[in-house]
Amino acid sequence: MDSFQALLTLFKQYQTFAISTHVNPDGDAIGSELALFLFLEKLGKTVKIFNTDLVPKKYRFLPYWNKIKNAKASTNFCPEVLVILDASSRERIGSFLSKSLIPTHAVINIDHHVTAEAFGDYNIIIPTASSTAEIIYKFIKSTQIPIDEVSALCLYTGIMFDTGCFRYSNATSETHRIAADLIEIGDFAPDEIYRHVYEHIPLGKIHLLGQTLRTLELTSDGKIAWILVTQSMLKETKTTMDDVEGFVKQIQAIESVEVAICVCELPNGKTKVSLRSEGRVNVAALAAEFNGGGHERASGCRINLPYASAIKALVASAKQHIEENC
Ligand code: 5GP
Ligand code: MN
Image (tube, rainbow, N blue to C red; front, side, top):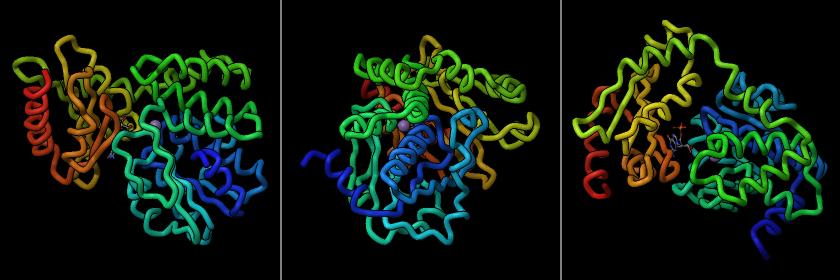
């Protein structure tokens, strides 16, 4: 039986489902959750979505976004099946949820990260897929149930986000064909979706970007660039960690840069890291050295060190990767 057929059989077999995704959920995580939620509801299932972090404001144009509940709301819900989307590892749904949201029968893991762990009882991991939304699209297409307008909008948003608006190397001709199909089904204007996600920037984010770019440092050969976001910068600009999204892309675009690093000080003094590669260095492998993961050109990790030490360790490791590959 092929993997999508087996997945459908599992979905039909059980009645109660919980869906979750990684901390700091992005467009792919949220779009995939909502489309799968709607699909399971159509099968007549009881479905709830629980995330560790709130739905960022820019995704609140998606219908049913408020079906996504806070982790604490899961306390009295014991699903038969837990579906984890786009998460790479079970722990990445957040420490509370990964300990408390325990299904009675099965964990299903659907992901597209090269570093994804097969932590589920049933795993669909397709690293060649642009996004988890693309996997959900292909899965729904493989069933007799048509994709509805709202699901098309959610899936398009997921694919658009994870391909950087179809600019990254994961946007293949097939991805474009899928996007075209979703636009037709959903009957939405793609430019409006773009504006929702990228052009509702709070003013504070622009101030934060200004402050962050002033921290820019490069190695003498210009191949590694890094920027820093501290808690005091977030406080001063009245922004949150969500607002840091996209910053690393700015410095990856510098002509000489092979590896771009954005380092963010967490409230607990530890460090959140985003890594981007121009293509020669595999930053999924680099992140894995720090117990993180992701894709070859876009990855991340959390390091249990204050930011200054984290930067030292990251730059040293990036230098080694550059020596081996560039
Ligand atoms: P971003 O830099 O946009 O937060 O993340 C880029 C990619 O790296 C995403 O695909 C994301 O899932 C992955 N990633 C980011 N942080 C972590 C992390 O702490 N652990 C793992 N395994 N992957 C991460
Ligand atoms: Mn994704």
